[in-house]
Image 1 (cartoon, rainbow, N blue to C red):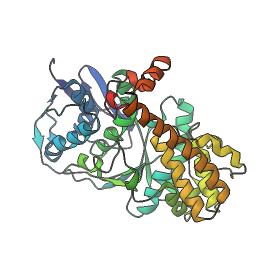
Image 2 (cartoon, rainbow, N blue to C red):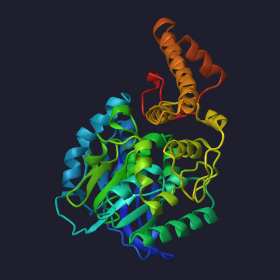
Image 3 (cartoon, one colour):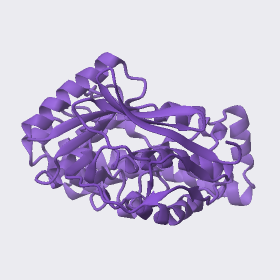
Length: 391
């Protein structure tokens, strides 16, 4: 239908051993799939989460052409939720959601937490180990990985979950491919994907592990302001862990041998740690400073390897700052000085960017984009409006 983003043909079916919830968004079939031993709930909130940024970018309403009602609670919260997103990117518009609504409550009993076996999700598991019943592992975050690697990851983490008396739910969806086609930033869209999923997978409570702390917040898809607003009558969404820096989380994780030995933090692999990428080195440095040792990660034995952590983004700079704080706390001057050198270079680059913006009217940035255009310039929906200069 022209003049709106249309969600239609919402259906739940079993296909080739998988339960599949799907719908058409405009003319594209979007699906959420789990092995058939896990139940899905016929619901539409997930597809609103997927369609929202597209509709806000087009300044067109979302129209749900289906007998499946939208949560009344979520419908009432969506305008304020959009105001958060539109304050991050002023090119986005607050739009209407036209749908039949219902305040019925599903009798959900499961408590889930998204789980990658990384530091953030492992910390959330540790903090709520007695309450969490299901660990949710979403393949969208492992885009481009081959089937053998994914199957190995599922097998490994299923066994780990069972060792704690939990159930691992492997989830597959084609949303990331759809966002790439629509030029919607994954940094933005991933949060909406996660937070709108709870009802579809039958969660009474859904934990979304934090990536950043309360004192280091900036626009990001999963955020303590926006995540809880995806709650419905049946599913409470909780953004968890923003009170702890990643090194503080690591320290607490080291107190539980099973969770610590299961840490999987690597950029290069989804079922083993390479010990060489920036995320591996980051965790190895924290464990080294804390005088810990785990089976899944090698020991840090070369301070020169820290150079891979030289920050080029706000998030990476925050990770370096976190390790600097820990190095100071444990009186490791060598690590502190090394990281401080990289952190100061990042700060200087930001100072130069401010000089360019306010004194040179962005001349240097314009020249740089002509010579080497950043990937995000071609995106339609980013975390900031293009005039801001950030993704």
